[in-house]
Length: 262
Length: 262
Image (cartoon, rainbow over all chains, first blue to last red):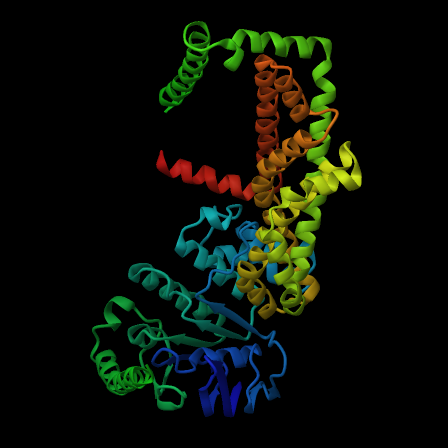
């Protein structure tokens, strides 16, 4: 369980103090698939970084399973849109990096790695280097690397944003397929509303900066979800319109606010 | 594919034959061979040097200058860059000095090195080391600062400690900087060696070229330049070989690019 209570965090930009989030609170239950959505720069990534222990809040507290997060949180797996594969390691070598860091004995690594490779369907590319893989395959390697140490919680910050629309769809389905077996908690940051509704159990809409929660809705669509039919279902459209009405307002006022700043 | 490749080789062969032929004809008909010599005279001089073994000490001298200078400059350059690259405080203190020293034409210090270290091996090694040091330093420093940020961040989230980061990211990345830096440094080192030999020396290929020119022997001058050419090409081939051995993933990537074009 993740408990964020009364958290504030600001940044310095061009000598000005900017509040990313202010007096922000959110509770995420175990096994929940939560999508955080909101206008650019509304503090979504800041919240993820605080759960991961990469940033410390100025006020308030972030608790993970009841313990305050004060250092890097090694119970989470974190996947960003950045391609952080080691170019000199093969697919296998990259996926086993976390095992290497966690001092998993070499004898156990091979089996775990081949399981992970099978899970993300990269069979036949074990000995390829990142340079030799396509964009989608590299994402699969990143995903396998994040999943291999079976973190309780997956933090995902627009993991597939760099992919084209079709490939993005494929990767979302892959993620859901893998998640349906692992059932870990997922906190998924996106600014793609269709993506958020398609994959999540719960949608949390952020206001413009400083980020607060303006809408918190359950997504009551049945799993497993079939992307082909789900997106034209009446429940989907109803939810879409409901969230969009709120989100639209925040995006527009964020735009106006940054316009005035210029 | 094969026919076009052998066609390219044949075209190159024709160009070389054309240049040597034109040179020979020019020496016969238009220009006094005193100025440009003749291919056969140059070949004869080369054969004389090789058959008497006279060339060996000159090649060995220049090669020693290059090898010592390159090794010292590369090791120091990479080492200092890694230290400054991983410590922002040290970088802030020292980088203006390095920038000023880099902006200064290093070759202008050659007379000073000769004054200090004499006319033998030492001043050349010092000059080449200094020139190579700065090339390697800037190459590596920029690399350490820019390329590794994302990789190190990703490793830290997986729980990597300082030593893990060093082992998994910094050391392999340094090999990359080392090889790419070497690629830039080799031609500069060769220039510096010849320049220093021109100023003061008793052996070496630059010395041989200078002595031949002073004796009005254009054949000797061209023969010495031909050997310098072979040394330069040889060193480049050595770096390419080193790259294939140390960074196999790089050449693998290149092969795939070529395969995709086929």
